[in-house]
Image (cartoon, rainbow, N blue to C red; front, side, top):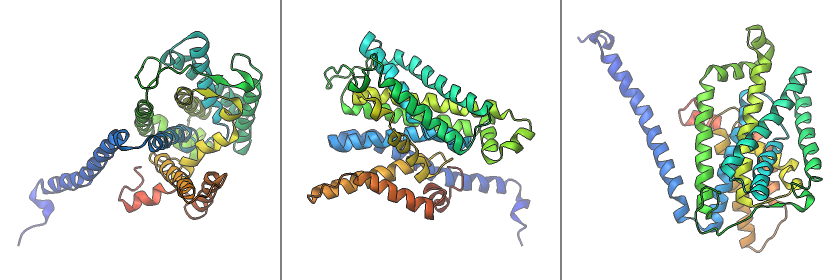
Length: 347
């Protein structure tokens, strides 16, 4: 009779490696296929479908940026449109008034948003403003900024700021000018970069500190974690990442209005993807953005094809989807889906 497998010396290691390989290989193939599809999309999509794809990836990006603050560190922001607006207006204003290229304007745009986030965070955490009160503070800061920008001549006030648009057929990387496909690839690169960054952060000491603070701040403080420092880091980083999305939006849309850029609805739009997909997960914002965009745009197009024009239909769909998710999938769509796919909590 043959002995147990463990006695054969090396067999468990070989079988273990084979098992690991059998799990990793499908994931690698899945990611490779997804990458090929995403790269090839602009060549097969109509102009409208390409704009929808660009919006989808944009929502995934800003959702991931918001996720750093709320999903990882547990700090709820309801005014994240503030950082989109600051990034958009600083880079857009410098380009319009002084001809400064967006890549150079990106630096002061990030600095402005990160500075605002740090200031809000410092005041809140210094005076122990937390929970719903911190969320209300973020709304107040966003609304205050909207009113201020409505009265600034440099930003165009309520009349708006309009960026100079050159020929859209020619690609001008230096000034972020080009056809819709160029913007699609730009936001795709941004989304991949922020996904990789967040994955590395979650596996770092900072990520473990954030998770400890999110689960129990008092216990984390008792263990010696400088909770104020790491909460400030999460708020500042989230604001900086969101400002990059604001710069992209300014040069993609070419027009900025304070009542639109700093609108409360834009902040809710930023939050929806990670909430529906799964707050605190890496792939949750992507899944949420995919579901929200496809349902919203798909239903609107179906109704339009049938001759039905229903104002606010997309917002109504978002509301229903949010209600269903919170009621039946409180952790979002991705966690149970990940379990079914055998990923556990790795995503």
